[in-house]
Figure (spheres, rainbow, N blue to C red):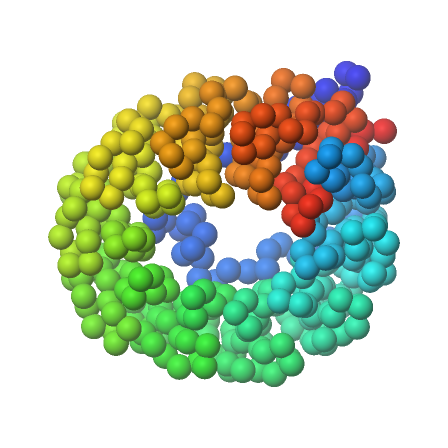
Length: 398
């Protein structure tokens, strides 16, 4: 049991480091939406470099029971009916019965998206397979991202372009950097500047900015010479480039930074909420998260305080609820402006499929949308992941 407690504490530490961070300031290099040159991630090591895990992974159902035997060294969430799993150094795919649909044969494998699964061969080339394991697009690319909005970003001889589901190069590989498509647009870098292209490869915004974000509510956020503003689909400035920082429009408002503080502007560029906060971000549910003097709260579109800055951390609303931290403990806010739970958990994650993962003194379990512990921690479950398609990856102590 002492060894079990050590393993559990180590898992919780890793989860804390990876899952509970303050929202970075928009426009910083750590903001995921700004990583125009997003990569597929660090490639997995060769097969012989993979150690066999002592504690195996399986899958738990919503009743808290082990639905798929824990026999994998690693397991990803279910997507489109299949989950990528690893045994020693090889990856394959299982269905919800736990049976292998695609045998263990790849150096790397990712969740299915838009009907195709991205895989890495032992030649260090990437391609896509169908759900029966047959090749949809031959593994011949040095880098790939998943299909999104019907196109997948590829790298060919150091340049980025896009292929369609038939494997045809729909947009030539001519960009130094490119992101996956989002709301019909991709951020690209050509030369020293960034711009936007549409799904036909047409240049919508010329690559002449230091930073650019896809259109949100008809306006694109851009930066040039250190200042942010907003342009329309013709590339014409609608709100002049005069802000120190900015975020996208949501529900007609955008957070901007002026003289070191954040406020909210409308589409004319006029302040609706004057600058007065260290941070502002759209938190969903028609409210905005704010920070002042290291504490976080929530305001509405008119600047009315919903929750005064009192939390050490608060995250955006997802599926109706937002995790918050008060002191050393976590709880949940609801969209009605109340508390779903008091601060009582060591860690808290977003709701998925009506359940949220929480860390208690006895381990990790799940609460439901009433705030009740729906799946209590079990001593044999060392680590858990979120539910997807009715099943959650679980690491079992044996």
